[in-house]
Amino acid sequence: MTGIQVGGHVSSSGGLWKAIERAQAIEAEALQVFVAAPQTWRPTNHTPEAIAQFRAAHAASGLGEVWVHNIYLANLAAELPEQLEKSVGSVVNAMRIAEAIGARGVVLHTGSHRGLGMDAVRDQVIGAVKLILEQAPGEAVLALETMAGQGGAIGRAFEDLGGIIRAVGSPRVQVCLDTCHTFAAGYSIHTPEGLAEAMADFDREIGLDRLAVVHANDSKMPLGSLRDRHENIGDGHLGRAAFEAMCAHPAFQDRAFLLEVPGIPTEAFPKGDGPDLENIRRLKTIRDAAVPAAKPAKARR
Ligand SMILES: [Zn+2]
Ligand SMILES: [Zn+2]
Image (cartoon, rainbow, N blue to C red):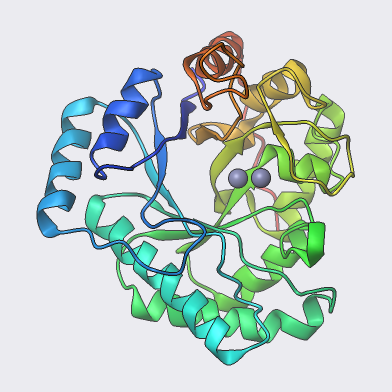
């Protein structure tokens, strides 16, 4: 048993609890939702009744982990103070809702250094993360996502995130590894050797115990392209073998693998309606065939 939960990002439109139904319809074992429209700053008002309804539906569903994805506008390295304030506010809001609905935490695109480099923004980002944890006390985890690196995105290199995490010093700050992003960023995780090397680097820079959740996406773009274009499982430059290697790698055991794939084109949805049942089944088939390698002794750091 790999203990990997295969899940996906699902819409929560029409009420948070509807996400549970949608996750069940694609046979997901875990789910991710937005709790506010991702392209706007305006928070959605979730009533206590709606939150209770979500919790009840989740408990009755037998589904595993719930994750909240923060809105896309946030940038903890924003240049203008008011942009930074809005960014922090959006994450605090998402963290509070995550706590309320019983989610494990919030996945965050940390932001962009706008080409200035990490040294120019690191202190600001560290301060912002500390502020978020202060303003959203509780158990919810803040998972900084690995990024493809386009536009100066923070998280292209594992060391970007490791530096922030070490400085903040809280066990609540963890990492979401997006397989498409990490591959596009230049980590050759499509081969077993490349994957082993990348995860050894992850362990050195961040620590494998900080790997909280995985965004499982194939990539339309080649290795090192820095371009963030998700593809259906097995149909991209990562390919099926990459997911076979991940499901067998000790670092990925007992994690939720959340799909954010376009979906298989159909007559009704020529561009796909992903993540869909077909992609979930593809990854489950891979997961179920995987034989996890033995856990190595804890690396010294
Ligand atoms: Zn992602
Ligand atoms: Zn992406």
